[in-house]
Length: 445
View (cartoon, rainbow, N blue to C red):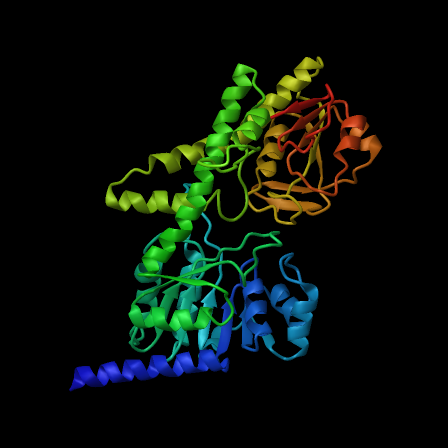
């Protein structure tokens, strides 16, 4: 009889939460108001949910509370409207968790210097949630991580107080699929993968995500969902590495790699476009594959493709500096003492995000080689990461003329590259931003 009572109790708790979610009376908490968390918060509030944003960064919390947007993928008017409607509040205090029905975690998962996972943010936030956990809540992790994090790291912390996952509360993983700057695919219309710690948790999580996501894809477990995300980014990392390695070979063989790729991608089947560059950047590709690489060692398994891809991509900033040296040598100039202007610090076109940007490493390596380095990027006019702290300069004809070499490290659409080529003494283009511009001044990666 006790087992029957437990099953009925579990069904009752989950059914009540599902009913709240479907009626949109459930109170939602979003922990971490960054590139993933804030767009998610906005989408939930837009359909009528009461949403609480929790962020230890007081400035972020205050800005959101005032309807002030700082994320490019969020429309200013959307945030302002839901705040005016009273659908959004923010706090830095985790005591708010006790009054929430669903808590979605969107915190950073960086790597340490040894390329090992740093789950300090996940552990810290989970611990704070555990202090205020009550029956009938859904906890969903969206942060990218290695397979097993939800079950092996979060679950024990949450169950330490006596409540049981799948019975008293519900636990799931639904990896974020945010592509900053992508106007076509947003939080709402990007297919959403969801995996539960147990069947009941999956049922509750599916009911929650189906309220605002057009197509939700269920997988058998949180571990499977975690694996989906790291595979997606590993796929990209490996294929970019292949394009980068081809670039290194074509450089030695005197072949234009961009011509080769353009021709190859005309094939209508069996191939997918990936392009080389000065390295990889952003919050996913440089980091996430190493989560899988690290976890594989626990199973005495070596992920050779992942390791080689990471090594190849990390070499590209050095290759850019080497090629810059050769371009300057061709003009009878030394890199040491030359004025080098970088165009672009963001890791991606038309974006204000410079996290893990390869341009940072190019900047640092040029400095170490004795060059006088400056940069221009209207999207990221100031950078402070990985030992590089610098402010950009205005892009004028005089600045271009004074530089011994201009290196295009990010292809922003608001830059007149024809004028750059016209004014500059020499240009090293790592992004093929000068496509269609014929000039002996231009050297392609």
